[in-house]
Structures are given as C-alpha cells and as structure tokens.
Length: 284
Picture 1 (spheres, helix red, strand yellow):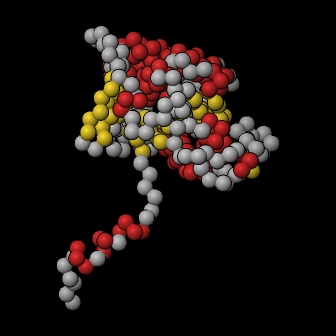
Picture 2 (cartoon, rainbow, N blue to C red):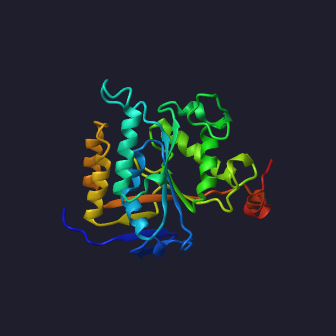
Picture 3 (cartoon, helix red, strand yellow):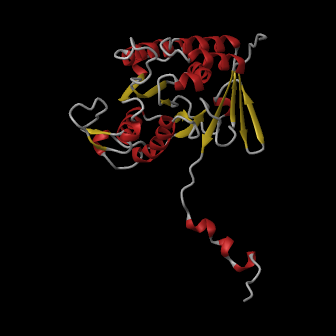
C-alpha cells in the first residue's frame, strides 16, 4: 500500500460535491464549540469496525465522543475456558480498543443487556430486582436509550445500518430511532430533562451494505488506518476478528457514512396530486 498523508472529507449534497480537510468544512449544520457525538454499538466491536477512522478525525476537531455499548458480550466466547468470564474479558478489550482511538474510558457506557437476547428488551417495562440494565426502576432499550440521550444531549448520533444481518443490529437501530423522539418529548420525566433538538443521525457500514448509497466519505492517512487495525486487534478473545482485520486492511483508509432523514407525515403534501388538473378524467 502506498503512503497516504492526506485527510479528506467528501460530502454529496444534491448535485454538489463538497470537499474539505475537516468534517466542519463539509457540514451543513455544524455548531462550533457545541458538537458532541454519540456512537451506538450493539456489540463492543461494531463502532471501531464502522468508524475507527472517523472517531480519530473528529477528535482532532475537538469533538467529544461517547460510545454506548448495548450488550454485555456474554455470548461471545470462543472457548469453554472463556465461557464464564467472557463479559469481563470483552469489557477490558473494549476499553483497550477505544483508548487507542483516544476515547476516554468514562465516555464508554455499558448498557449491559444480555447478548443475543435483546429482542426481549424492546420498549420499556418495570424492571425485576436482578436486572443489571435497570434505570430508574425500569428496563428496556427505549428506557436506556432515552436516559442516555438526555444525559449526553448529543448533536449527532451514529449506529450500524438497518440492513445488517445480525438481528441485534436491526433491533438496536429501530429502538434507538424511536428513543430519539421520546428524548425530545415530555414522556418519562424521571429519565431527565428533554433534549432541545433531535440530533442528526448517520448509519455506519459494519457487515452489510447500506440500504441506499452513503453521502459522506472519509479518507485519511495510512497511519490512522494502522491505528484502527491495532484497535480492532484488541479484541483478542474474538477468534474471527482476523478475517475482519484483513477486510479493513484491504479496504484502505476509507470509511463511508449515510445520513438519515426523517419525514413526518403532512397530509397537505398530497393535496395537489389529487386535483383534476393532474389527471385525465375517468369515463364510465
């Protein structure tokens, strides 16, 4: 691989191609001095795979980075010797991984939902006494997401695509999006003060392709790529990680993100299309 010493952000906005050395330089809604990014990782290694370069670059722009790790990693053991200790092992590996990318340990939040069981934690309900994911007496993904969105009050959020094959990724995607709107409303006041504005949301490519083409490309240096590869390597307990490292290395120092747009229902938007001037009269 030839040496690459340039960092470049390219954002496609309609027919316009914006290019800059910083994310701020290509952004449509940058808030200088107020940006705060929240990454949602269904499993501890998802965010480094999808955004290990991006995280390095935004911190150079002095943007605080927070990571929510949804599951406890308890089903990620690759040997019988690891079975009873895998959650603890993976937690240490995750701290080591994200420390390499410059994320402070206190900005890594573990929601501790049981690995491979989060379908049972959709929504919100009263928690049982032994529920390690309980917050304010309640449990569920929407409870946890709403709580932490309000506490952190991010300006932008990032999570794996809705098209990933892993059901945990799809469930997290769906539950997080509705939690954004809970967070901006008056519902569940014990989880904190409502946020002033719903943050912008972006999808990361982790395992499967985006549902629609991404509109933001990050190209950085080979040194940043090596740092990402070393960070992924921190997950030594995950025997399959070697094949993922090979894919990342062959892909080069590039990452792609896709911004999500929410369109709320407005009946008035359809008025004109049903007027007579747009159609041939119906003849019985």
